[in-house]
Length: 294
Image (cartoon, rainbow, N blue to C red; front, side, top):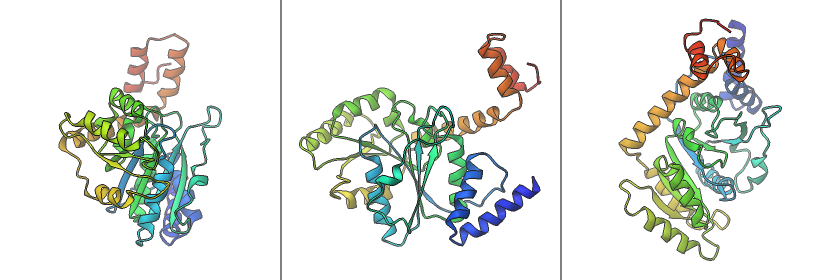
């Protein structure tokens, strides 16, 4: 344990000095739940980005990262990819779609969702804490476009942006899933396409009767139009009390669930439940009280 702690300390010192390899190793330790000290959290700005597949999340994040890095800010991006059911490793390569930002100024890391239904694995929270400890100015988290399971992003980010395409059907699905309850702002991407403004107006109209509804901004990540307005709006976001309360509840649930999964009896309880030798409530009791019964 002490040796592992000393190793992470060495990596931390190297990473804070700009060593990207040390940073990558340190984040891997955090992702896998390895031993490391608690880091003092700096005042990093954390944005969660979610939305359906094909909405242009990666391109928009690329544009935002480029905008901020050109102003001298340090940017770290965690792109949460679907996991391989065999290896647990990330499948996608969003790094290939990062064409506007300078790789020397922006740190990019693909992260496996590890089967998390919320698109956010518990390791991501620990990785964010490391990046905060290292003093990165802005941390952006892109989640799997999984639709109804995106609530976990609210447990990590200070603010959440929902990215939508011109298809009004996406926002209807978001309404049904309750995603709008965690979104602070909606970016209607691909404003350069025909019918996009009508779609944005339709979304605004649909939200007009909702108290505290997120603001809707039209933007084209590809062309860069509307980007400055979006950047300004993102910096002005102040989450309302209801969203803050919801995020606190989600964060607490996430931490408690992570602790339960780490208990020695968890694996045995899961296997016993799968073999139908015990009932789900009995399996839950086994893990909760961790009495070692299998």
